[in-house]
Length: 212
Image (tube, rainbow, N blue to C red; front, side, top):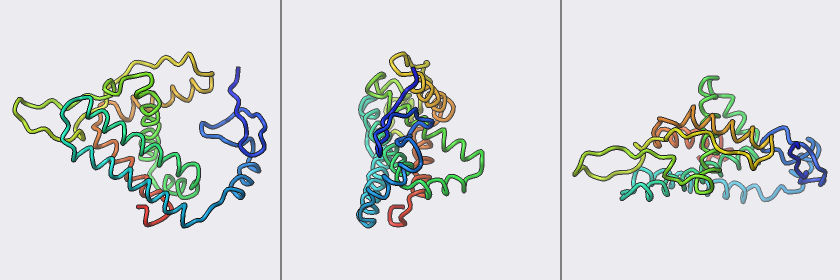
């Protein structure tokens, strides 16, 4: 059975063609945006706050003295949350600046960036719900007696294909796309590389200069 959603504007049921679709047709999206346009200054402040929280979470990856695998996974999980929240906010509410920033990238770089966000969405959806956070991470091997440091040198682990039987067919396809992006763009790469790439693009895509 095809997945259906309720249009947030008119209430009609529709089959989404895109993962983040919320409206049954462009006219409903335009109408919803007109009705829900708030104070631009307040929106800019909220986005700036979110970008700041994301940046602080990523900075903790390098700054915090991690004692064990579990603590490191918790710090990484927080960074995943903030990065995907900022990305979703820009995609949903600041579509034009986001698309412009993406189009400014060279084609190969654009594919890497898009794959990075898809892979992080897979981590967000699976971490703590279907998989233990520690399952995603391979800590850096240190010599006995070496100083403990941040987790930016830790790497993403390869994972088996997820069990998606509880999802509708379209949901299974989307989550499998995220899984493949995770395997292609995150696995084997360091935590620092992944979040550095993601945060750099999001700050470029933010429509308000103060948020960058």
